[in-house]
Image (cartoon, rainbow, N blue to C red; front, side):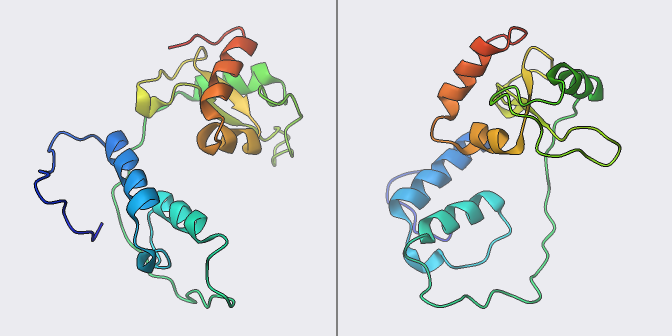
Length: 168
């Protein structure tokens, strides 16, 4: 991250990606030097954190941005998911968000309501790709489940609300 090492603290070699992201977040929230906040980044998590830290104390004028932003190549690790599970969950929702109960915000080309399938216990946290761990959500609820201050309470609420879900 370009920050000085803490004297006497040896970096651990067994820190996984979830712990690494959490540690990075704590460092940036608690110890981040303001001079880095405005630097462009391709890391979407870091971008969101920097932008959030700048709200209310960002540049006084309109930022110039970059007319020709750089591209970077990187490695992405993704989970292999079942299209049958996605289709089943979307059909079970019948066009309504399973969290807020509102209809999908729009109809996609082809006539299908736009909902996003969310794993209540994230795959990255050991959750299963099954209908007992997946719900159909509108984009707003989906972002709330991932980024809301009440995300943990929402997960408990949806498990109680949707009968097919199991606490994993």
